[in-house]
Image 1 (cartoon, one colour):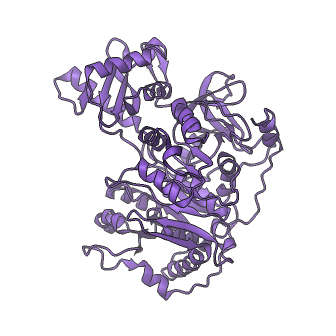
Image 2 (image 1 turned 60 degrees about the vertical axis):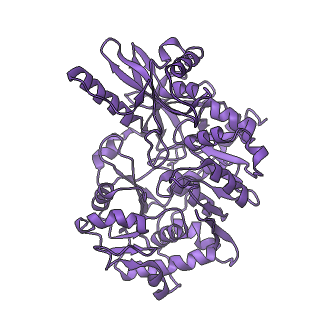
Length: 571
């Protein structure tokens, strides 16, 4: 077991070292490109084909793309949209933007036309790199994006309106020089523009400087059990368009000069496939992974004894997005033989809190302690720290415990000074997530502040109830929300995805309810259970409880105004 005082030693002795000049492109590719054999990327395609890319090859292509973008008028500070899935072209696009001094703006290939149009116009993006799927959604709104001068397609497009003037990625690279002199960027210069999910109003663009990569590294190293070790290979199904996939997987792995596997491990239906994930990790010798709780739950339900079925080299897993919960934690430790290091962060301020079980003990169900370099507290509405054991909002200070600026901070919201100001209480940056900090400094996540609710006067956090529900053998996944009730104000309702082969019934509802009653407080059991085929999820793997709450409110209004047949199966 790790020393009880190891955490205090690491946390107290840590010092930030942020150079005046720093460029993510150079740090994640250029500095490794001198070797012609060092592998950066293992591209595992859905059809089974595998191709390896060296740092040297990716750097040469990035140089060509930087030259091509510059010839198209892309200048320092311009926004370049990157609408690509996991793959070599995505790495090339990021490196090309950073070394050009442009601002990379990753966007999910799952975004529809409206989502794309809003972000492209709000950012005034001047160029976009797309695959065929992304262009299909871009084409209908392209004429309405006045600043968008260049669209570059990385693969052939289906002939159609607007495709005639789309530039061919491979042709552009073939015609451009492989020699490029990177611009000199300060650590404080903007590098990334990532739009938040917009759970409270329109999406906001979080502008992040080059130094944020430095701010992410202590947590990355710790959560991956002191990455890198000799032979480490990283993989995550997380979309590289999001902070989780980009800052928790892709860029830190490349910063340390190790290979990352590019594959979302999707099945024929386009969803995450647990069997493919296991096979992928076995085939490519994956040692380190970032897996969302949703993926871990699917893997747990799919294979009870993964170490007996697959030859895995997995030595570390970081999980984030939501609390993995005690059930998943115990399964991973006993069956997968890996202790999950949970992590907490967000787009604006990432990799703040988490575990590193080889250095300090992990408490099942806790999201861990503040990582070295980050001063984290639980505060009240007035911005004052609350006593240990009391619930409040998680916040991080602009300055570490030694009074030095924390490099993990974003620069602000794009053209939204009002929203940036509202994010802070003095030097405390509010996360919007509620938690309790115990006497040892461990944080116990309770959910988004807007996910908390009261039922019959009792304050309910969905995470605890969901973790209990997941222990029932018939439950594959679940989400807990308030159902409006005229007498009680609200009652606890659970949306449940049953495991394959289980038929919903009144008897099953009663059994699940009894299961929760026997483990939690009487007021926490779900008075209503609705079985659904899948939960609404964000592209980053988080359950969208907000949509379920809105549906419950809609149904309540319909019930009080007149008859309505709600969708879904209720029991």
